Amino acid sequence: MRMNYTRLNSGVLAVLFALFAGVMVTACKGESEDVAEAPKEKVIKYGLPIEDYRVEYDTLRPNETLTGLLSRFGFTINDVYKLTQCPDSVFNERKLRPGQICSLLSDTDSVATPRFLVYEENIRDYVVFDVNNGFKAERKSNPSEWIEREVAGVVNTSLWVSMEENGASPLLAVEMSNIFGWSVDFFGVQNGDEYRLIYTGEYVGETPMNNYRILAASFNTGGSTVYAIPFVQDNEELFYNIDGNSLEGAFLKAPLDFYRITSKFTNSRFHPVLKRYRSHHGVDYAAPTGTPVYAIGSGKVIAKAYQKGGGGNYVKIKHGNGYVTTYMHLSRYAKGLKVGDYVKQKQVIGYVGSTGISTGPHLDFRVHENGKPINPLTIKSQPKKPISKANKEAFNAVADSLVTRLNAIK
Image (cartoon, one colour):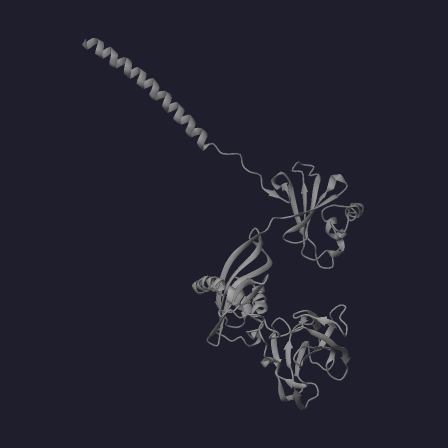
């Protein structure tokens, strides 16, 4: 019996060993398969497997033609002619701008035969030319996405600079002026003023497209905080303050995106050209030539003329309740603008210039109420329709949530 037991154990051990060895082989094989490298995904750029080509980049230089750019890639004048025969809707060489990128994709062999030429109009849009197919062109776009972000900061020099210092686009300062333009005087922003923003921006990869939309905001100036809460009422989305009153009013605080006030409303100002003291019943905004000038409120154009001995090119608009606004020293008028036109609030009516008696480009902006000149910086503007009683509860819920988020931004 002992011998049989021993043989049995030996047999069992042999079987177990064989099974164990098989398991080990299978396990090792499986492990080997698990760690095997997956096929490397090809990098796609311009809709092409970019690593399969030799790529050369160049940019359009100032005052350079398309021929000059493409000659550096080895193309002839005849090649350039073929390239320009595609429809303007696909590629228009007249819209070339310095700094725009052009890429040549060639074979990676010793001959390096050109295959594709790519012209980048901007970060998102580009045109691919099939070099070996008569320069057949195809317009394409890189995918973009909207990303939600937050930013907060303190104004030390200007709102524009503060945005840059906090890693946000200064264009958001313009967006803020559009939202708070009826309730905050951005020409009077002071050091120590604070802002908080929840916004969304369009990006291609990590590159911003400079398209932004503010989702909620707050601005603290002089110890008082104004909130901007978006809410849809009567099929119209507007920004409201914490009390449910619309931030939009009958008149904007200023007729252009903020720059710098160089002269305020006064009955005695020393004129820099005439060299004498006289009244200045307006506000001067220093801004680069060509800066768009807006109508601060809806109204009818009652004058569009040139005043040689004073205001140069000017536009005068009649609003309701006896208000008339005047915009002077314009470099030019908005295209098609004429006397008798009805313009809407924030519609461009002209562009900053230095016509008439002027020492430099600026806008001289004036307001009359029932024929009497008043200080444009103190004009009162009635807000649009507030949140209705029926929508008050829903609005309060939205406002509470957004205010909590805004206040939590460090």
